[in-house]
Image (cartoon, rainbow, N blue to C red; front, side):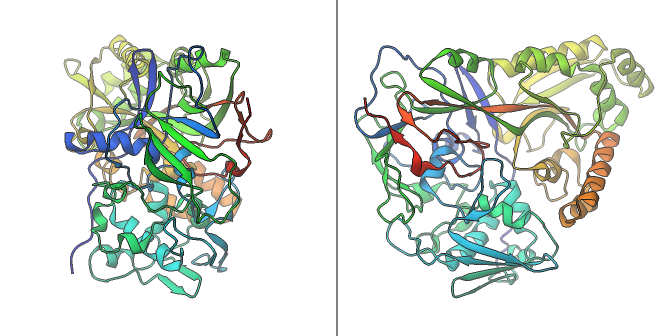
Length: 552
């Protein structure tokens, strides 16, 4: 049998781009230039849409019952080429797809989605999920347990997928044999009538919760395809009407090449009064009802616009450095890593470049009672004790292209220069980040579903960061114990132990978490007064059936 294992040499990258007065959040997924355009389109429906530059007073809105949503590119195409929704969520992704279960804005509840209920055995190893028998694909085919089993197996064969889901699904019995090609199916997944059962090899308490993020895809459309290319080549959406399960479906493009979403006639839930959604490329000719951004300076200008209501979402969106311990001899010395920690005035960075909006963090556990002190004198002492070569040019890699990140990193270089470390900044392409990396330290971001996303980067199974931190497995047992226990006191104790190990090894240097911002034109769009938005990178219940367009 064929070996189904795939080796990921790239990952999702959130970028903010400085583009003539506006900044955009984007994702690089491609391994080479051939895929760059596909990546841009993927962002529109696969990851998130951010819009910053709109001329508000000189244009009129589209007439009729239409919601306009900002896209992130000015280069539309006549090829409908969008990616599989198995990485991160987006507003438009929530219009097109349903998940197995639905969670709230705080990601703490598990409610009905495509599945009606679930049960878990006392030992936490067996999950039985009962599917609705009244849900349909947009082509009229029924959605059933076979679609779920097929989707899990296909998901596991893909590289660029949601890390939380990947961690959970790798706990299922028989996954290793399946991926190695020793089995045609995963023995830990069984289907009977409208019930699908997952048998885990080890306890994973977040298994049911993480299913609120799992989009099921249609087996009858994909079963004859090479599943390992589902996220690589983006072929699933290379047609005008991809088969979806949500409230809306794509029906092509309008005359300005904006994507048109129309109501899904096979959707069985309560439908929104909004008949059409436009994902808009043409920013200068029409205003936008919905757009979102990360915390950057340009969001300030939109707070003065009375048409827009701002929703600040406090999420675990970490900004941090990762030391390239596996490949850089310089940072293999823990004293050098500690010196860099002491040399950077994190509070000043947070205040000057992110306006203290969010939280300073000193470990993955944002509640950890640890404070790093800014102490350049101590940093110099540590470097001297480590016999640091002050002629060495220390390279900092980053993939963001916005001006804020660049200026902030230049300030970091100033801090390091002040203690005698010569520095160089290097902008990285997506493929450069984890393929034979030569930089000493990487600045990156992580929009975490929960603290386990932060922890899971330390695991040997973390394909990307293991390339940087090495596959020593020192965190694996502690994290597995944390994930398995249901005792709150034990969880806190494991968190404390993990935090202590983080401080000792300092593989990652956390800086702060920042907010996501959503701007909604509530002078035109009516939403529930008590609506709460969640992390824009994850699916949650936005109560879309209660949205409507106000009559002018």
